[in-house]
Image (cartoon, rainbow over all chains, first blue to last red; front, side, top):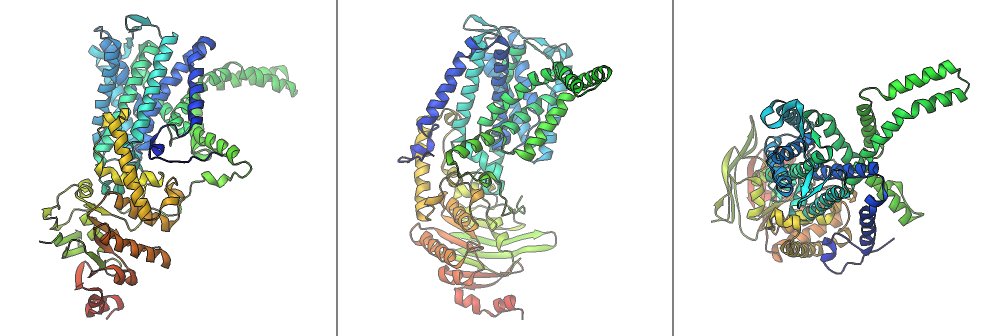
Length: 383
Length: 252
């Protein structure tokens, strides 16, 4: 167990409280830097998706995790960022400009969504953000002069400083990684300054935040705008990665995936966004495995237990039908969310903290340390 | 002109008159207690002052400025802080984070500066941290700095709420039942702190309280309310002997 001896107020402010952080994050950065030269192109592609999903996750965490405003509309923000990219590309706008434009435009839309959301709380806010997402989806499908409707839009290869950066090149991976790291650092800076503290205050008690001088409406709108802007910039990268975008890519399911990212990663720390993104991107290879190998394995097991050949092949085809059924993905997402909410409410990062503490305190770890206690029920009168 | 004035203040919920034409004044550097049976409208007056409810009638003046129409978040900026009867802390944040929110009204940094954490943000953060430390020292909260609120006992939370109000560096502080739920020793500490807030920090204190020993020990003047109306006003002993107050508490 490490004890930190603080001698300066700076010690409460710095991002890395002690040298251990510098070493572990330095090692992680080094591993990420050599990744393109070691990993297969499939894994690299997955890693790029992890970076993009984690960026969106950070944006969603600021809104949902820290300001306490749930949103199921982030697929729409991603779509706005992606379509801004595709649209501006037609006019040969350089990458840095349309990247920032995607962020800015989405941020403005986010602020506009934030205004009506001021009067809504909890489930009603979720419904409002879902309807916003549907409206955006519909606009993308109908506004054919700009978005080409359901035909979709092709996204040209990214060019940065006169050189082409194809979507499966190491350079594109480093770009996505860089955006993720800058987003995380910026968000951490925000969270350790007055704005971030105002967000947390609004999440925990609006009445108290107001009586401490926090303009609740203004900060909620700010939170929406920042969250949307981050998502919009991620949308620009997402469009490049996919190289083709159409309205049906930005559905409710994508918004739910973003919620899964933060719910499974852990909503109380930015670590959660990254861990959750890794988890989510890993689901796909797992599903492919389920589809390709599971039926055979189960049939073999059945045969080993003495099932006849006909029964075994019958089982095989049934399992195959189940594994490739429509909507299985959605069902699996649902089960995962339920299991995490019930048994691991602090998410993967919470689990990591528990494991860390177990070894730090060995053999004195108490399971109750992380138990949520709600002894004093807050008054709801002033809501 | 008085330092703080409520004129003809009323709050009606339909036919129920929670506060009915209450007028009172608080002088600078005074400790004024509001007493009264449950439902007398004491907390409602606080909620009117901190603009959680808009008053049905009446005006509120602070430092000769009409604050009746100010938005709720500006009340803290004017220098009025409050605590709540049923502790309203930011439960999933540390004690330090809670107290730093109290510094919000003094923050001047812009969003883009905070994103980059420019030197001026860093300097401001250190300054806020130093001010918070002074309050921590004043209220003996040193053991709890890094603790989450959700794991702290009730008595400590009560003190932290007071600390958060003090972090705003208010001129007028509203304490809603500061001793409720505290044991005898903690109540005694609270009475010393309230005295010190007046003498050392030069604050004006407006307090709602049931514990008469605490009221007697600290208040300069007392107002007794019942059914939203003022029954009596004056020194603690005068008010306690007032026949209407005795009747309200004991039933005549």
